[in-house]
Image (cartoon, rainbow, N blue to C red; front, side, top):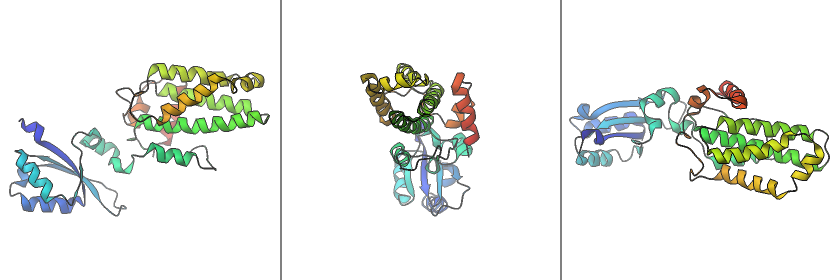
Length: 259
């Protein structure tokens, strides 16, 4: 077995204590030690870190994992987010990763404001765009209710929601399946006309019901069926790319929102 295959990364809790335990158990620990990432933020009750090691054989791996079992959260050797470059740029994923379903629940709250989501550069691009699309779909549904109640500004609000949603899909053109994005954009473009009679007719059609189901399935689908190879790229990398049309404007706004 090639030695390169025995390089491991571990996410550890109380990493300094773990390293002391590791050094006690291995007399040649300096030979195995490749590096330790420690987070700078000391406000968390349980400090975390990433330890990089190079083992000589499988027996050493087994011994390390037994000795440090109390400290090991998980092995992260295959997760690029724990590589040095990503850690130096974004910190630990545990501090910025999130559950789509949990954020969707926040968006479903009765008093939903236009934006309550703290953006960080290391976040998954596809997950962030799905959250923003989910928000816009909630706003669009509210605008449709206003349309049915004959609110004067409903067509304008529908048009705004549709244009923002289209811009988000354009921004995600390198992340999501092209045919799906094209179909969703086609339906969303119908909401930009601002003609009340046309809009009232459209929201009572099967085409609108199909659009709602397709969008909801796309946003909640977790198998990755509609995702392209680069869909999990860090948000910062996506926003630094060149984008066309509305996607460029959204990217500019999101860059300003990064913390």
